[in-house]
Length: 395
Ligand SMILES: *Cc1c(COP(=O)(O)O)cnc(C)c1O
Image (cartoon, rainbow, N blue to C red; front, side, top):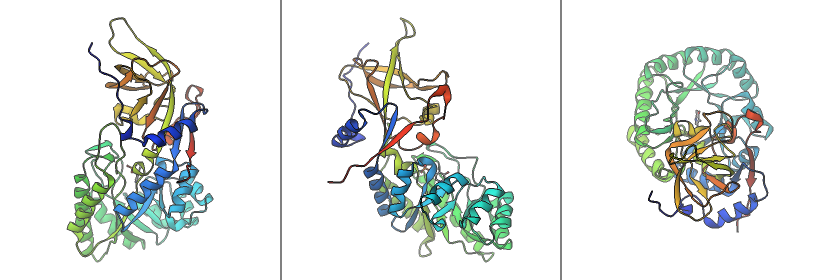
């Protein structure tokens, strides 16, 4: 079989100087471990706010709820999109004021709505009558934004079908909200996470415009659009930059709304924290299943249950770096647990230098989002993914 030298373009994912520092920082830590680089989170936050100067940023806490991450974003002035009373308690305990919070989950218990209201939260998402009636009952006069159903087409990790409703349903809900003495505030959507097709925002914003106009005829002035998350991070497949996303998306909003620009809210998760994370992992074993099988199986000490669940259907392809030099082997990558679904990549063939040995480290880039928060607590006894913040003083 013809082989080429192993070549991983490190610079595509990290500044090599920074990588060196992170490596030495992680040297004595047991693997697997997620290292979060605080400077990069800050940089991503600054880039996003500069690209959308008129928007309020509500960080989607589920992407990475490490208290160190939240503290940093609190310091930056971020708002937060939260989905449970546990995320609420976490943020209130860190001193966040309830005006900075949005209860963005459309699936919530009445008792939880009451809990949020008692704690001072006044901004709620909704997409159904049952939920709206619950909000009206226990969160009087709250601001409500209504979630539009999107298809998730073009996204690596779609969030479609389960959330939102069609315009015909929402139209009636918005009128009903007014009659229930709530404040119908605006609309939201999520085009799907790691959305590669910027045009998906165009469709969704056009639907917002349609609903703004339709309810205006009934005397209701909506004033806010929540553009959701979906902004990209850098994985194996390249994407446009956040600046390019922002320029296009703001053009869509301006085309539809002209002089009457609504208030804009963003709910980024992945794009703020993914690139700040590197998982340091160890190669446990390299083996072949039969003499005639071309591909070696490479087992890492992290897999689907340790935090890499977004490898389901090979949806998210993390850049993975092996340090040795050698010729490149195409491999099958799997995790350490006793479940046969704990295979990371089998169809898409990752490359590994043929000099790699058990005990070597593998560096998994762009793992700051949806890893630790997804990791199982005790499957096969493995603890949840350990995560540490790396704070380097800026020079
Ligand atoms: C998960 C989620 C987000 C964050 O999405 P990303 O694609 O990670 O930016 C934003 N809003 C809502 C309602 C979500 O559920």
